[in-house]
Every structure is written in C-alpha cells, then in structure tokens.
Image 1 (cartoon, rainbow, N blue to C red):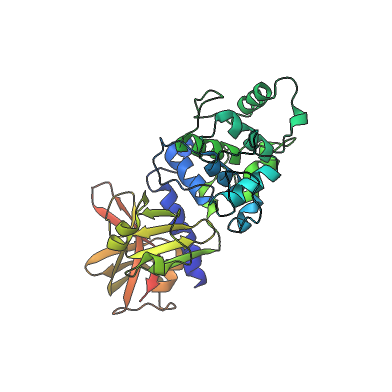
Image 2 (cartoon, one colour):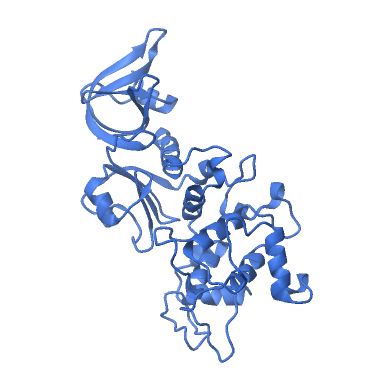
Length: 357
C-alpha cells in the first residue's frame, strides 16, 4: 500500500501536466495555471472561462485560498446583509470575507452577491490576503492599490481596467499569481503566499505542480457504475478530469477504468485505456509474461498483459512484479501507464502505478 501511495502521487500529478510539458518555459501557460488553481481547491475550473464571476463566487474563492477553507461548509448563523440570507450558498464565505476586511458591502445594507466582481474589488481582497491594510496606502486608495497590484505583478495575463468585471479566466490567472507572490514585507524565496496552501516554487518562481499532491490522495480505485458512490464528497462543484482533460460525471462513468481522488480539493482524476501519446491511461488484464534484464535477473523490466508489453518505469512497480512482490503470471492486474513512441515510431507503454484485482 505504501508503494502504491507513492506511485499514486506521481500518477495524479501527471494529470496536471498531461497536455503541458513540465518545463520552465511551459510553466506559465494557462493550462498549467488552471490546473494548479484547481488542485489548490480555490475554484471550480470546469465552467466557461468567459463567464463573469459574481461577488458571492469571489468571496468563496477568497475563503478557499485561506486557512478558513477547512470550515467552509459551516452554516452561517447570522445575516449580515438584507440580500444574503442564512441559507444563501455563499453566506458563510461572504460573512468570512467581510469580517476579515477582504470585501465590503454597499450602503443600504446590501452585499449584492449576484453582481459581477470588479477588478478593483478583487484587488482589495487579494492584497488583504497578502497582509496589506488601508493604512499601507495613501491618497486615492483605489489608485494606490492598483499600483501595488501592478508592482507585485499580480496583473500577469490579466488585461482589465479597474471598473471592469472579472471572468473565470481572469480569476484563475489572479489566484495563480497570488500563490507565487510574496506576502507583505517578505520575499518570494521565503514568504510567498502559496505556502499557506503548502505550495512550493520551481527554480524560476512558478508554482511547482509536482509537489501539490500529498498523502491524502486516494487511489488507484476501480471505477464502478457510479462516481458518486466511489468518492466521499458531493460532485457538485468538484474538479473532474479524464485522461488529463476536464470531464463530466457521465464521461467518467462511461469510460474510466480507475480513479484517484483528493477529498480536500474535491478533485477526481480518472483514466481510461486511451492509448494516446503523451497521456496516461489504464488497462486491466491477465499477466502473461514477466521479463527480466540480461544484466540483472532479479529486477523485472517489462511485463506482458493481454498481448501488450509494458515497461516497468520505477522501482516501486518493479518490486511489485518481482519475485519479492505479490504479482505473478496468471494474476489479474490493472496498470496505469504512460503512452509514448520511440524514435522508430513504435508505441511504448510505461507502467507508473498498478492495482491488484
């Protein structure tokens, strides 16, 4: 089980980079930004990126980017605003955002949760998370905050005027930028904001997606008839991926062989026998042959399952198929593989994780 959990972390991280090579040059691409923000649990990234974000939705994003996320499903016991009842889906998040000074309401006792959030409203909240207060700015607060926002490069990939309403794409970029930005009085090397969510940085100052999977990751798990029954959380506003791409519940239920899930971020990574180059997939079958190298008769290098030959890509997987492991010729097994091609155009399937039947 320990070996499988180690391999599981690697398997899920590939879901983040399935379509984006993990290099310094690719680290700032939108696809990676989107998946980092999703894995951080800040927002659901499966919607239309051009949709406007409401003030209620943004309050939730702010809370989910802080330590308050762990109690984000608690009921709100008081109504701060006339248009936000206790049963409003954003009531807790609005109450938390207002009480911490990240957002404010309007005269007349309204919050206007359905109204689109503007860039200047979002900047106030983001700078507050970084530790900045009104007393840190002089003169026109809106202009001063905008200047700080630009100075900290929180505006990377965002092209909006202060009064414009933000889209989902804008918010993905904004929160990704937040994660790598130093907190007030700190430096990126020692006190970038992402530490709150246990994020680490690459050598070029981007969020390291490889380090975002942790020991609370569960999988691989065989996919049954119902995805809802396979995970310990509601699928409403969850982050779903099939073979590294955003997916629906029905697409996963119709095609997936195995899943991994992360309860904290309500994320599911599912794999089918996609057989697509550069992606991961899963296959189930009977072990027909286990091959050893001529120079090391103790360590298996390949395995044949249902007529397809797989390379054993890491020591954990090699151990499982060795004479010391539990897998033998004739056993049923599910393998999670990475598909690629060699210089001659031949398909290569490398096993990165496995599950005994």
